[in-house]
Length: 156
Image 1 (cartoon, helix red, strand yellow):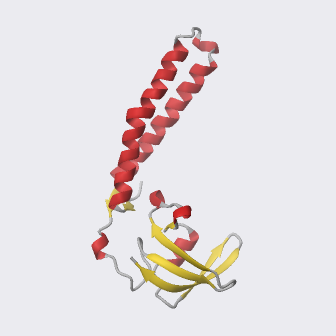
Image 2 (image 1 turned 120 degrees about the vertical axis):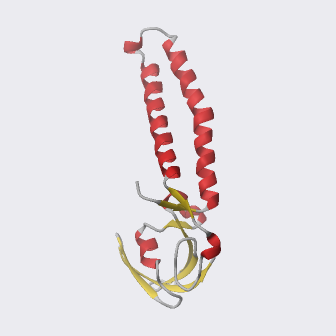
Image 3 (image 1 turned 30 degrees about the vertical axis):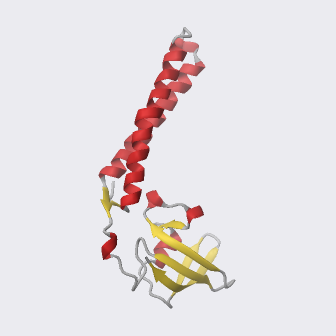
């Protein structure tokens, strides 16, 4: 797995989520398996099969999250600049086709949440904005066509 850049907040959130999954969710699934096992013949027990499958999915999720955490590098926010778009910058853009203003904060894939305006840097729009300076126009190919976004402002 490649290096994953994260904020300190994102790193802590991921570590907390892993702890929750291991401490609470893992126990709950173990209890479901034990309860289903107590119901008798395991060869025809759908509850047991479902609980075992849920356990496998949970363990896979925990392993993936731990791998992400192991490959994480925390970004030193004190070294960030706003002369050109980079990770953790908040970018205000104008869509030149409809004059709509949008604001995105570029984050790692693990911290992306479009409802909060957090856009992953590995998305087409994120990649298209990276390295651009205030006043430049980013032409970004998306499934719906080509977006022309003017960089209005870059901040931290």
